[in-house]
Image (cartoon, rainbow, N blue to C red):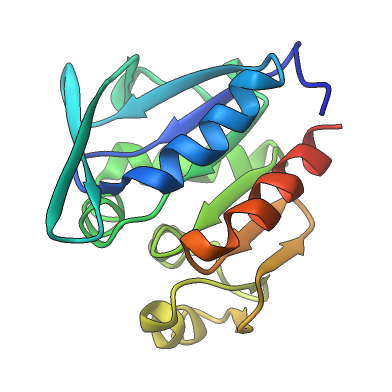
Length: 177
């Protein structure tokens, strides 16, 4: 994947599912992209390995209130129940996601992360997937949900869970070509 000229935003906060951050970030970093962590959390944030075991901490590069979609080529939304639930109620996070869609830039969301699409009124008439427990919320927001490893609908890339990371990462790479 040749993405050395790309700058990729990762939007997350405390409770992010660690592997859903590190796997796509490592793949993009190794391909030469610049990856940036954007968050409402200050300074550092706590990742999780599932919803109950603490993982590593990560440094926040840009506060979400200062982030601008124009500065990035794509947005990645890692999952994690706590992370996704917190972000969908953060006005700056929702506004940033809307800005990426308005600019027709790739947005990749995995696991619980598509919840923010419902909050931002961006799920309507979109084909997508997510962690199964968010299915009803997304369908109620007008999404066409399917139980698939990865779903690509225009600029939107979604996957269900960490077991889908290889397909998720490949779809992100394809969108950046």
